[in-house]
Image 1 (tube, rainbow, N blue to C red):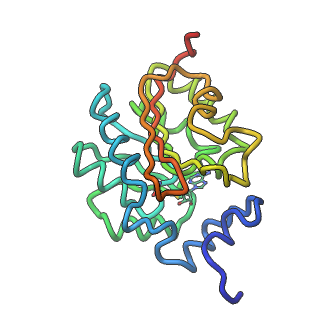
Image 2 (cartoon, rainbow, N blue to C red; image 1 turned 180 degrees about the horizontal axis):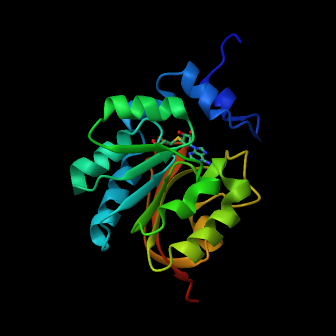
Length: 207
Ligand SMILES: C[S@@+](CC[C@H](N)C(=O)[O-])C[C@H]1O[C@@H](n2cnc3c(N)ncnc32)[C@H](O)[C@@H]1O
C-alpha cells in the first residue's frame, strides 16, 4: 500500500487493528523507539522503580528493548521484557544481548511471571483495552502486594480510540482498582500530549 505508516497496522481511523508482527516486519523503528520519546515519563518511571522496594521488573510490550536498556543502565535491574511480536523480540535480542527478552502475550501469559516485584506497562494501554479488566483481575490475584507501573501518553482533546474507558491520567487512576502510591504528569506548551508515569501497589484501593 502506498504512503502507509506503522499507524495503519495499529489503530486506524479510531479502530483497533493490532497487526503488530506485520508492522515490525515492515517498519524498522515504529514510535521512534530508538530515540525514546516521552522522556519525562520514562525518567519518572525509573525514579518510581528506585523509590519503592523493586528488584525485578516484568516489562510488558517492550518492543525493540530500548527502555529495558535504559532501565538497566539506571537501576542495574535486568527486566524480563516481553512482546507479542517475534520480529521485535529478535531485534531486541540483537540490539541488547545482555538483557532478557521473550515472546509473550500479556493478555494470556501474565500468570507465568508471578513473583516479579513490578509489572511495567509502557505505552501499551490502548492496545490491551478489551482485556484490561482481565489483566487487572490477574494482577490482583497473582501479584498481590507487588507494584504496577504504567507509563502512558494521553492526548490533549484529540483521543479517538478508547474514549469510553478514560481520556486523562486522573480518569485512568480512577479506573484502576489498586492503591495509588505515586504519579507524575508532564507536558510542554508545544506538545499535543500529556505524559504520565503512575505507580500502584497491587492491593485494594483505599477510599
Ligand atoms: C507503543 S509500543 C511500546 C514499546 C515500548 N514499551 C516503549 O515504551 O517504547 C507497544 C508495544 O506493545 C506490544 N504489544 C501489544 N499488545 C501486546 C500484548 N497483548 N502482549 C505483549 N505485547 C503487546 C506491541 O507489539 C508493541 O511493541
